[in-house]
Image: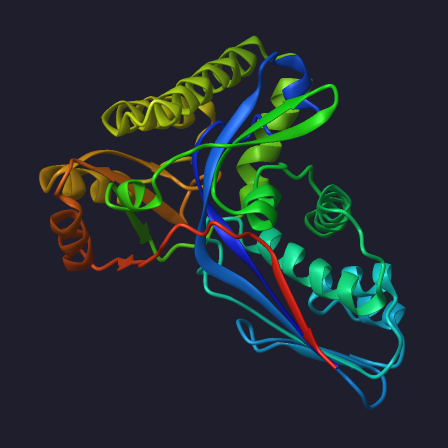
Length: 332
């Protein structure tokens, strides 16, 4: 049997960090707005032979053992290994993964990869878990790997695709699809990779600790992020892309104030270059400190902004908005 799965990564537009449990429980109406993009995480499983083999095309890492528990003990490809141990497939198993998003991009690549792997394993062993159960399993496994609380927003675009407002509260998360024209939104966004990987757990963990310790300043800043996310949702519902761009700038202002290290001199340099060529504003993707920056362009200026950023030496990533989310196919 061969099973192939794919899951999109995402561009977060507003409301990051407040998606971490239990922070959202202290901010009534907490929400995050993001959009899935076709920089896919992919998984391929082939059955037959003996033992268990995991391989990452992105890192070149590979491990083979005779039991799922030994995969985890090896310390290699820990996210994949822990998911395999949970689903416990029969031996005679080879898994190969890759992700089109750059490492440490801030596009939720590890979470999308976890969803793609969980979806493939779910098909292989026949558990037929629902989408929310797959999300819970992947969140818990990734949290065990990164060893700090994981935000929830990255998993939902990987599962559902599209542009969504994610609402967080006492009952968990609710997904609200936003009826945005994908082509019009794509025409306003430029995505560039700074070349500097980031680890989202670092900034978010400091914010998490300060919030739990009762920092009024952090509470206030996260509440402003909550309000900004609500404004982004309203702008996209109204199809008002100029307003959405303005709100993206408000989100960036809030995020820069949230923790040290969110921005860097290189990020600020890139934003200045893009603004000179027609970007109204920009923000880092994910927790910041590196990774990708998304630029909101004035109508008709996307090509100018992209060209200027390429000339500055960064990698401008071509993308389309993904409307399908997790896809799993199998051939006996």
